[in-house]
Image 1 (cartoon, protein in one colour):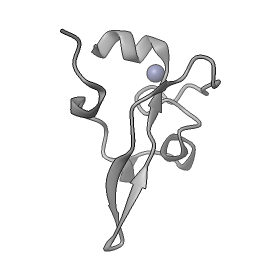
Image 2 (spheres, helix red, strand yellow):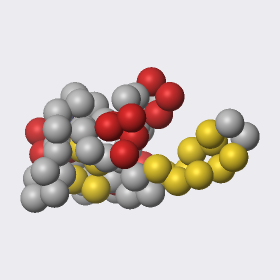
Image 3 (cartoon, protein in one colour):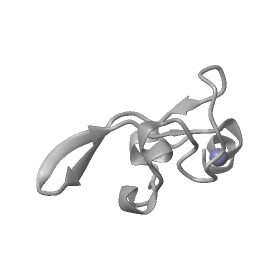
Image 4 (cartoon, helix red, strand yellow):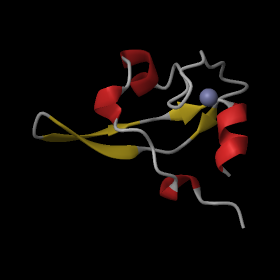
Amino acid sequence: MPTPALELPLPDPVTLSDAQQRGANCVWCAAPLANATAHDLGARPLDAHGVSVLWFPRCCRTCWKDRS
Ligand SMILES: [Zn+2]
């Protein structure tokens, strides 16, 4: 059974670059992502300055394979 995306532990968003937080770059290795190759990790709640928002992390296929 592959691990469901929502249960994969992700890096703390505060440690990530803007591009990684936007889903433009892989959350793990920071590789630039193309829509065709990016793996959507699902919306995650994020507490930003006391306001609860959602972020939409994505990763590259290599990292996804390593972690699933
Ligand atoms: Zn990656």
